[in-house]
Length: 587
Image (cartoon, rainbow, N blue to C red; front, top):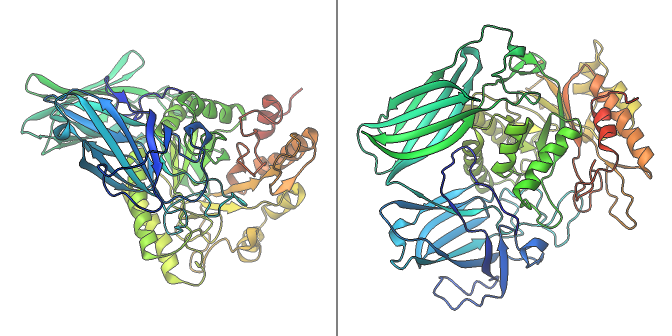
């Protein structure tokens, strides 16, 4: 099995233990079992963290299954320290036992959870871990993203993902430890906000030490006394006094400068916990009709990325595969990705931070409106923002896409309220990033106006988005890309940046009998490159746009509209695609 790196890249401890690998597994659609002690008939061996629908799991069963069980043994000796059991993501509702004791319950298919299991470990060091999962394949009122509710993938939806699909792991920590670490770059003052929360047995007079480096240069060496269990401080960095565009401390896709950090928690002279982390100094903002990075207008060249692999589905095949996807997006000429209907593995965000790639983060949709659906979404979206807040690569939050889950925005006030509420909640939880309330059309509360338009005639596209005195009025009052109005009544365009957040979707495949679904089709490699070049020339030069997002990065099951095949092989030479993306000529 492919090895995975430390799963939580911004709060790293030296010692940890992966529980990926072979587990016992069984479907339980009849709900015959209630407890690990029941005589569960284990029918399969499964390779975690690959979901049972995937070939890589060793199960490869894509039928309708609503309940399943996992079990394995692990070795760790009990001791005076705490032992934390982590799950990266389990879809959708999980209940966890260790040695027959319930240690955790969690609902939400895309976010992590943790259990302190030290008190239930046996004295012999051999332990049994059991996981029960509920994931109703027909439930349209839960955040499910692109997971199909029909038996076979159709249209733009793909195979389901049930159960564990990110790393399961253990780590030892002291009785008092660093539970949370959160970084906030403050560009205007050349400061880094640092929030540290202690967990476990919190005592008075706890001290936290924070060191930050740029390469070998020590930038900060601070210490603070925790108030209660928390310290929240601003760490001042030296302003270099030169033009910001040449400041070597600033993070950008062109120069992804990361600042390494070490945080220690101590009581008197005793060090209780030490973690490694990183942060960056950068800002994302809106200034009139432009997106701003580090105080300068920054054209966005994004590609839509579904985040699926043929043999592992939503789960990544390996850490190397995540890194390769970041490298390929950059090699294709893009400076960012729009992760579509998926909360990606934190290791992807790590590589985007380190290699320099902007990430547009979008909540997986539910497809039925109800108070239960909105409650689920609010809870999980809050966890998403908490998990990924400190990653410098994340530039925009998107709670809704194309009115999915709120299908009657033009007619039902409750649907409009949901979008506006999630917009304001997101802005409250993170005041440092722009938020798009509903991407694609029917916008209300939003910092950026996203438009989805799959017209693949470059001349028509150019005429539609040409700037003239009357063009904006015509665009917002008369033209309807996708057949939907762009802004709701009461929310006229107020000068926000306009980004063509979905377009293209050219289907092309050389394989005989391969899927050819797309928004348009071409029959040859030359035709594919020619149409891509002409479309990208239009969107690169349209002054109306602050950026664009091409559909899409790679073929995904029945969709053949990727720039890459599903195995990440380029459909055309990478340098040719890169030049077209950037509207550059190759001699």
